[in-house]
Each structure stands twice: as structure tokens, then as C-alpha cells.
Image (cartoon, rainbow, N blue to C red):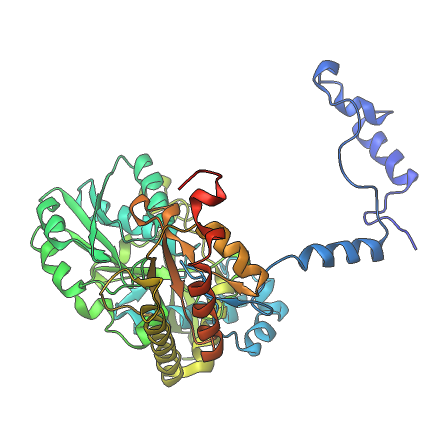
Length: 465
């Protein structure tokens, strides 16, 4: 049975025409010159009834390589972690998924408490004093950290490691351009930031050193070694961190970081084709009033009953634009709630256990790669749940990953896309979701493909070796 999705009767149309003072629909477009108007029919499908449309959309959705049907070894910022079913149940409650900015605390206690719990979790994980009510994602949080450091130090020079996520560095540069900040990239050695080059570039004009640990290659940076370099120069240390790793490694705040940011996606947030996710942003108490966005605080009412309020609101919607810490700092409350529910369900021991599984399984996978004749580990540096595999022979990784898809695997990230010097290097992520059998089969497939002529670039391109 066919019916209109947006029903409009002739009477509705006539009343609209009368209200706006026209007699024909063409009068709405009189101001557009006839020669500028599109003539013909748009190249779109014919209209469909409801059942036909549903079948068509299901067919399109079936083309997605989802985590339910494919074993994923792709990370690079978005990871396949276990999602407790209670999360979707909770965030589907109307009081959460319809909630907007909680300006009126008397009717927003549930939303305010959810944000407060998120802030508390982030502070405990990062070892920082204060966290805000979340941000768009980890990359924008990193850019905001650079802006905070510049404003706090009155300096305009940012040093960022090339081992920081390439997309985060791009966003940092975009933000820096509008703020007239200079961004200088520091190279890496053996998969981690070159500390000698970092020290040589740091001076009294440096607002911040920005590093990621575990970094984009999955390797752990020497935060304790970087801290004195920037603090002796009077700047701030910004650390971006995969929060799942904090179930095992020391919190950046305990190692001297001034600002700790990252993406909460590993905590109960689905990959969802790459987003949206939820950024976290935490600072030492000294920089609390320079934080972007808002902070929810706990208080009591006149009867002594526990309550929650927006304690700090340093955004342009609340104060003068020129005094605002940021103009692009809306939070991701619903996804922050996902993270809070995940952390509540898993508990402290659960987070440690999941982090340990990530570590153990990734290191098992790395040992299997290292035992092959066609591949080796690119870096001899401690890593968490990602590592870089180097193919011993030239190989077309795009073709290889396409072949893996046909075999039911989502392959790793081709680092040659962002790092010209790392052509033929694959970034592999192994989370708690991967089984031993999947890891063994994945390594065996790559080992087999690496020796096939079909994946040698010169053959694929029709060029003689």
C-alpha cells in the first residue's frame, strides 16, 4: 500500500498559498532567473512504497562491513570493543536521548548527574583535578588544548609530535591558523617522539609540547622524559591518551601532564562508520578556568539534599564572546553517558581486565607476525593494543585489504596514506574482541598474500618489475 511520507492535502496547499500571498507554486521561485533553473529530471530513483524502500535500505546496509560479520583488525582511532547491552537500553530512555543543554538545574538533575559522573570517571582515569562535560571528539579536544596552552602562557608556538594522530594534527593546524599560532612538527625515532629534536626545538616561546601516548603507532611515549623539557621552558605538557590503556599504565597526570585529552570511544561507544564519538578534556586545577565548555558541580539545596548545577560556563553562549575560552565547545552528553555506563558496569577491576586482554592479545598477534618470513615488526618499542607491521617486499596494501574483506576480515590501516616513509607498513589493532583463532587465521592470510604476485604493485599497475 502506497502512501505519502509527508502528507499534504490540496486544502493545506491552498491555505499556505493564501497565507503567504501567492496563487501558484512557481511564484515562490520568481526571483531565480529562468536560465539558472535546472531543466529536466533529477537522476534519482522512482518513488517507492514503504516495503520496497525498506528492502532497498536493508540491501544497502548489508554492504557495510560491520563488526558482527567481520573480524576487525582496524584501529587508528576507532576500535572494536565489547559493548555491554545495558548501554543501549539506558541511552534509549527518552529522558536521556531527548535531553538538551541543562540550563535549568531544577528540571535537569538526571542529565547533570550523568555529566558529573562522566567528569569524575575521567579525573580518576587521567589523574587530573578537573574534567569538563565532554567535547566533540578527541581531535577537537587536542586542538582546544593547544589553544588553552597558548592563552595560559601568552605564547604562540606549539610543538606536536608526528606520532600524534594525523587527523588530530590537521585539526590542530586548522584551529591554530585562526588563532595565529605556529605549529611545528617533531619527528619520531623507532615509533616514538625524537626527544633530542624535541629538546632542541623547545624554547621560551613554546606554549606547549603535544604528544599522544599510546601514540598513533600504538607505542608508549616517555612522558616522564618529556615533562622536564617543557616545564623548564615554562610551557605546558599536553598528552592525548587512549583511555582504555589507563586501566594498566600510569595516569598522565601522575607523570606531570598539565592537560590530558582523548577520545572516549573505547568506552561503550560504537564505531558507527567513524563517528560521532566523544572527546574528554581534563586539566590541572590551575587551568580550570581556562577550560573550554562547561563543568558540572555537586552541591546541596536549602534542605541539604544533594544536587547538581552548571558550575563553570566559559563559553560564548554564557559570557562575552571575546572572554570565552572557546566558541566551538558543545559537549556530547549522550555519548558521554555511554562511557559513564560502560565504566559503571565494568568497574575498576573490569577496566583493568579489558586493558590487560588488549595488551596480551596484541602482543600474541605481534609475536605471530614476527615469526613469519614475509613480515616483521617495524618498531622495537613497548606498545598497548596497536603495532606496526612491515612487509619485507613491496606490496599493494589497498588490494590486500580488499582481498581480506572478501575473506571476512577488516584489515589494518595503510600508514603510507599519511607517512610517505612508511609505504608497505600496516597498522594493526587487536582488542579483547579478537579470538586466538581469528588472530592465527589473519596472520596466516597476510603471510600467504605477501608472497603472491597479485599484490606486488608493479604487476598490478602493469609495469615491468
